[in-house]
Structure formats: structure tokens, C-alpha cells
Image (cartoon, rainbow, N blue to C red; front, side, top):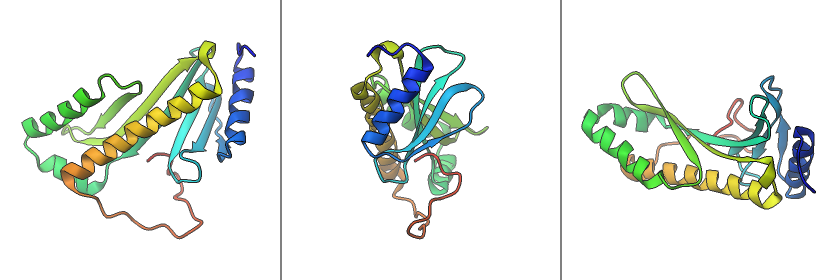
Length: 173
């Protein structure tokens, strides 16, 4: 079936997500024809978003990202600017040919606070395979970033969440 409208795309994507047993939350978004937040990988607290922006007909955007651990941001802040830029350059070189795009959100001192990943494609290639390929590529990019920062600065101490409770407002990582 050829997908040509946002409604067809929404219905197909929601069907595929449900078939694969993802937890799907529909988010109200005045700038999107549809906006889903899903668990990816399945059953994890990690989240990705699937958005069809009204401003770009036929485009599907898959988003996820990570907020840096306070310990990592503190260590970045203490680095000399040239060393910090060298670390960021290493990441840029590693990701330059990745299919997912990324954006580092920096504070006024040049310290990364968050990194967002995206994978975009149009309705003409919207298939279950391409949807899940994009989700996987974003997830792999997330894992790369987490690993890169943990190798450089150590594994941060994570707060524990009581079983069965999510973290309100947590949509990324």
C-alpha cells in the first residue's frame, strides 16, 4: 500500500508499533500531524519520538537523545577548551557518516548539556522495515554517545527508580 497522507502514515506506524508490542503515547503537538512517544528498546525506560511535522509534508522524523550526567558536565567544564573541543571533534569524526544526525546542546561556556539524535525519511520509503531501521540507528547512536562519555569520564552514579515507576517528564536516554 502506498502511503501518501499523514493519516495513512499515522495509522500504519501505530499498527506496526502495536504489532511489535511497543508502548505508544500520543502527544498533543500543534506543529505535528501526529507525534508518538514510544519505548525503544521495547519495555525499556528509553524513549524515542516519531513525528510528522505539519510544516514538512510527507516527512517523518524519529528523535531521541540524552542529557549528560552532571558529573560528566562538571568534568567537561574543568577541561581546557582545546581538550574539550578535541573530544567533541573526535565524536564529530566518528559520527560524520552515520545515517542518524545529531545536535549537541551547549551552555554558554561550551559544555554539552544534551545531545539529540534524529533520523528523517519521507512517505515514499515509509515501511515497517525503514521505521524500525531508523529507530535502531538512533538507538545505536545513543549507545555510542553514552559509551564515549562513560569511557572518557567514568560511569556516572544513576538514581534508582522504584520498580514500576517511570521518571515523570523523562523522554530521552
